[in-house]
Length: 248
Ligand code: NAP
Image (cartoon, rainbow, N blue to C red; front, side):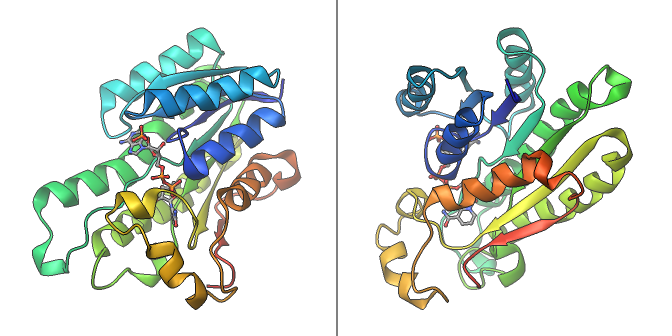
């Protein structure tokens, strides 16, 4: 067994691809999701039918009690986490900055940035030597929006991912001497349901041609980068934010 991995938001998209790739490498995987029990169970069932080990845990990463319960469940059912992928994320509705409703702002910041910080806290309580842990590796899923800004429609989403970038850099420095590596990836345009769920079913088709590679990426192309950052091949890589954005 390679270790125990928690992948947040693993019921579809980049999280699903990451969970499947991790299981193929021998990780026991916690498939976290918020509400889509059926899809999450399908991901876990695929892992188990391929001979791997997986559990599903419903937990909203923006809620402290949910996050605490999830990591305790992982302790009990798989053992303490050794690898964490903070992938769960939401895109808000499209608003100009002068129109952003408080609820939208709170939801996107608490999920994308707050969820990352809460899940890291719980993982660190299992990974740090001072808590009896043996180190580990963390990858946070940011977005190119953190550098591009998402002006005119999603500046609050861009801000939430900017927070993820800064947190990744700071946390990496904080725990580098204690056997824990922390990195992030910044996906560009990835072909997932996220776009349709934000009310833009044709977004990928519409803007794929405008990407430097004239296409969107498959979620598996992001998962490959995440798995590499978690692997021993990246043993001297920490505090890095890897663009997986096709030259964007
Ligand atoms: P997706 O297809 O919409 O999947 C999102 C996943 O996150 C689902 O499993 C969903 O679970 C889960 N989730 C949402 N809110 C959650 C919460 N509060 N607690 C726990 N789980 C939650 O999204 P994706 O495109 O794969 O995106 C994954 C990550 O990549 C996100 O952080 C996103 O910001 C980032 N990203 C995506 C793109 C892109 O073009 N797709 C580009 C840059 C960055 P339920 O189904 O149960 O709600």
